[in-house]
Image (cartoon, rainbow, N blue to C red; front, side, top):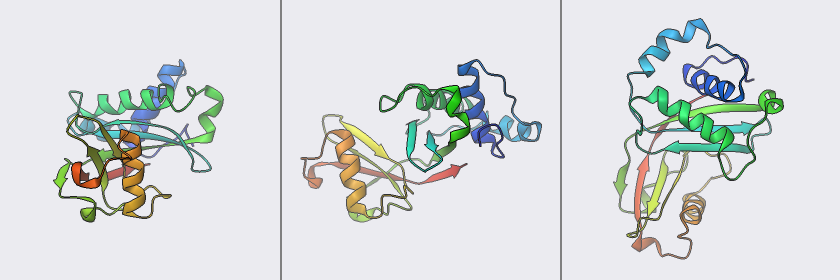
Length: 179
């Protein structure tokens, strides 16, 4: 997959990964105009890397924009997902034909009253407590079918698995996923 892409978003991510590895790869010319428009956008984004079997290989992102424009955010998150996700060893060149990349653009998070306002296919979730412990889970994860699963996973990520839902703060957001 990785040596060709029809998405400007994944092309930006791939270019950053290839540069980090010291490999030559150029963004297809037909994506130049779209990439120019991405340089003017601001939003949170996540870059996910999966193995061909669908299992996660790396995922890093930002809920809010942390760069001057989306282009830089995608590049930073791509390098972090490929080489600095603590759950995985750094990506090596021999894996490039064995992975796929997706880029999720996040809407602005909306505070909600609780889990009853979620749908794991439609909304991602951010959960936090009053002490600042926080975690995020993207929507549309194939293994997450129910809100209860979604909440269980995000609470565990935040270290809040033993906390009652009533004492937590919930936000939901939607994403636009690019492959």
